[in-house]
Each structure stands twice: as structure tokens, then as C-alpha cells.
Length: 314
Ligand SMILES: Nc1nc2c(ncn2[C@@H]2O[C@H](COP(=O)(O)OP(=O)(O)O)[C@@H](O)[C@H]2O)c(=O)[nH]1
Ligand SMILES: [Mg+2]
Image (cartoon, rainbow, N blue to C red; front, side):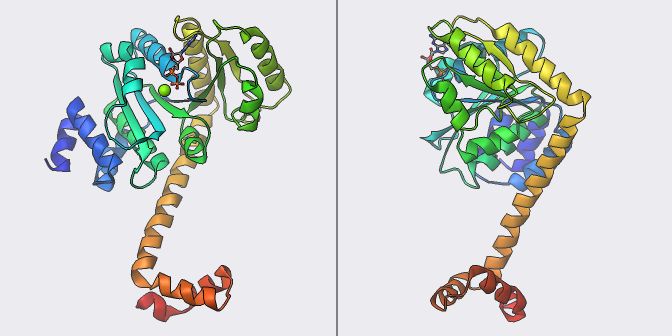
């Protein structure tokens, strides 16, 4: 089916059309057409990034949290990214299982595996979230593992960032090292049914009080203890999310963040497109080969290429 036809169905809230549109975006097919068509309907969803080490309970928590939001009258969806899995464009078994309750509640869950994704996983994920936003979901939970650069890029595109940690020895220090402290608006200490949760809470609280969290000097991260499997702490996390949502709306921070993201996206796109144009006009390999052999700095080489109109006009 033609993308335009699928988009028509998408607009009438057809979930099969939604899935097809997402698959196209993942495979970089007609992304430009799709995003241009839906863009005016973007911006209503609250984007909640959830990150933390593997096994911390992110999926289990999102399962409970999304159902909780649904019960309060919201229309949530989930985008889960797993960088370690092969790109399948479909469901990942573990996530599916962990989010069974949400699935049964009719919550739309999209699992993405990043390996082999065309056009970069961070960019693709953000586009997929845009699609979910335009479809009418709110909020959108975005699950990512850990904090590689890719995950950070995805997390930066979230309105509220939740970092999930578990009270296992060293996790707090690990979190600080990995830069997790600096990105969190809300901390969740999950598996608090296990030993060490109170101690961990105090350590984290001390770190936050001491100002290790530098994201926003006017927002002190909220710390919540939870047990996702037992459904403990879900109401508190829900309230914390709404509080943060209100905060970023009240002081126009959200608008600022969105503008920054828009600029960033444009900049990345411009780089990509200009590079494509450049490569189509000059013999990059030959130029590089010559530059390398004659020990020209890349700066000098680029200057030369840009100055030499013959190259560009080739
Ligand atoms: N004891 C305990 N186990 C939990 C809790 N939350 C999740 N788990 C378990 O931890 C494992 C990993 O959970 P999962 O949600 O897949 O973690 P993710 O990798 O962060 O998404 C699963 O076996 C869960 O059942 C909790 O609050 N307490
Ligand atoms: Mg998971």
C-alpha cells in the first residue's frame, strides 16, 4: 500500500496503519513524507524517558505505570529500545512478557531493536515517538538501557527523565560515574523489597542534596522507592511525573526544550543532507587519499576543497 493511503488510515486512528507507518520510519522509507504530513499534530504528548541498568525493572515498572495512567483517563503508549537486540521491527519477547498487563489493557507498545537500524537509532526512535505523539497518545514512555551516547540522545528528547536504580552495592556510585545523576528529574529506587533500599535512598538523597544533580537548578529531583513487581510506589511516581510536567509547563521550560530539540534535529538533518550533496559532487576518496599522502591537515584539505570551485561544480 502506498504511504499516503496508510497515512489516511493513520489519521482515522487505525492501529495497524500506525504500526505500518512506524515500520516505514524504522526502515527509512518515506520518512520525509510521513513526518511532514503528521508534524502539525505533534506536541501534545508528554514524553517520559525511562532509563537505568539492564534488569533494574524498567519494563516491569512501565507496565504498571502505563496501566495506572490509563486508569486515570490517559491514553499512554510505550516505545522500548533495546540496543543489544537485532533489528526486527517487531516485538521483543522479554518486553512483551514484562508488559503483559499493559498489552491486555490495550496499551500500544512498540519494541525497537537498534542494531542495523538505518539512519541511526536515536534519530529513528525520536521519529517513532513523534509518530506516536501525532497519533494521539499521551503520555509516551520511552525505555532505554543504560547511558551510551545513543541513549543520552534519546533521553534528551524526553520531557521528564526517570532514572531507575536498584539497591545493589555500588549502583549509586556507578550511576554517578555513568552520568545518570545529571540527567534525572526523578529517581526511582526499584526492588525496594530487597535489602539495602533505605541505605541507598539516604546515599542518593545526600548526593542530590549536595548538588550532584546539575540538570536544572530550580528542580530538585524527586526520589521514590518502589517495588514494580508488587505495584508499590506507582502512585507516587505518577504524582511526581505530573508535578514535573506542571513545573516545565509553568516556567516555559518545555517550550525552550522543544525549540532546542527542533534546532538540533534540523542541524543534524542539514549535516546529513549537505554531506550527501557534497559526496555526490566530489570524489571524496580521491581527495582524502591525496590529502593523506601529502600530509595536509583535514582543516587545510577541507579549506582547499571548499575554495576549489572546480571540485564542487564537477
Ligand atoms: N524483587 C524484585 N524484582 C523485580 C522488581 N521489578 C522487577 N523485578 C524483576 O527484575 C527482572 C528484570 O525486570 P525488567 O523489567 O525486565 O528490567 P529492565 O531490564 O530494566 O527492563 C525481572 O525478573 C523482574 O521480574 C521489584 O520491584 N522487585
Ligand atoms: Mg526492559
